[in-house]
Image (cartoon, rainbow over all chains, first blue to last red; front, side, top):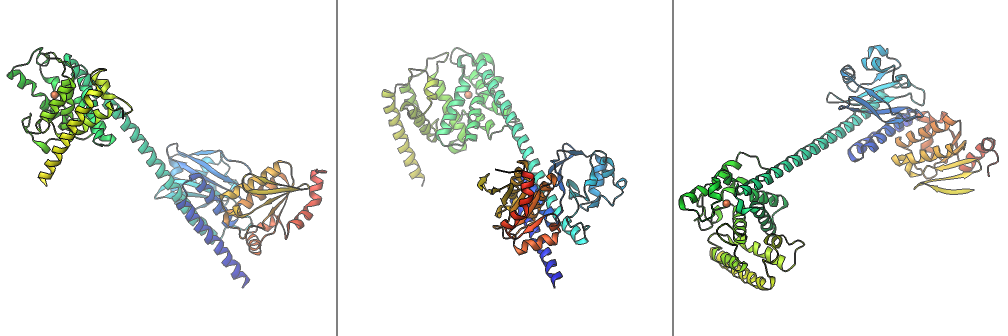
Length: 425
Length: 129
Ligand SMILES: [Fe+2]
């Protein structure tokens, strides 16, 4: 009776430890804590006074001790592991090997390292092997009772060792995943930085070719960005539209320089040559794997008009990519507000009149209205930075005069848009 | 008789030349390492008589056993006397089953433990304070 009671207690003690171990390995995020607790559980279950647990570091090909108990010192040792060792350890497949009983020469790993690492301090060596891969080892000393390990004890040890091996493996997989993700992130950031530098270099090359419109591409990029932000686009999409703005005229790189730089209005023949630039831009940009969507399309369609009279494809209304509509507006706005070889820039009053006349013909009201709001907000001092006003130069806008103009235009365009959508419904 | 709090949770006090450390509920978790650390600190401070009091410890699990073995190691390594007091009957049974009673003396109460140790503590600690 007493025997049976004590056996039950022993089983209960072991069972509780196994349950705790399962919880610990599944439940904790702190790897070091998990490993320490695991070794405590294993040692405490059978009252083993000495123990050590090492993780196998695949990259450095070494077993690194993480926790050591009962040796009266902290083990900082590492055991280098070569191919032979690996074979010898994984072949044991989580089955322990009795060190004292073992002729150490029969085990390659023990034979290789006995001189530098005194394995005789321990009784058992248990390799932790998960799906054929070594994840670590556990070394165990004698039981406090002085009894040798029973078959049951060994079963308990192996069950716990398997759990711990899985815990180590999970940790390794997570660490690998993290490292790969970090690597990818860095690679991606690097590529993006290179891409952006290249885009900027292109933009200045485009503008250099067109000596009267210095800084045009960059300003179109910035205006496009401002419009898209006002429209509530995500940061990622805003970066994309800025790039499209920078590159919208890239096709001009293949159009004759003297046509672009003609100091007079060019004739029809030359004009059709110049009109090749959106399609040419599309050809240049298409083979490139941009980190943002639809860049080539936005370049191709930045001279399309919502009334269908644009080029190169004569698209109408919603057939035109929304990004191309933004770039078109930004492009036209910058053309109107900077001096050109054949004419001086127009007053803001004129620009507002142009917007009024051409919304629904050249421009889409869905982009004109947000742009007007963006300009209005800057004039009313609602924004931290005055990016538009900076690009336009100090005295171009006159809030007192221009705010009412913009408000009238916005009201007009909004009521038109409202009645148009009511008409559609 | 100086009662003091060490760290956040481990209670201990010094009685004559002996240190009494209270095992509490923290013993059965990784936080139990703090109890082991407290015992080591007492030994490092020169005390050669140590009582671990289990009055607030219902049951000892495997983690607790491992930590107590650590305390036994620490005491053995400096030749200090170690007594566990106020253990529940279940814990005593567990200790017997695991063969740990060979390495540590058990006492029913803290007072009994201190009485056992007093001669030894006085001898190793001198007059104390
Ligand atoms: Fe253009």
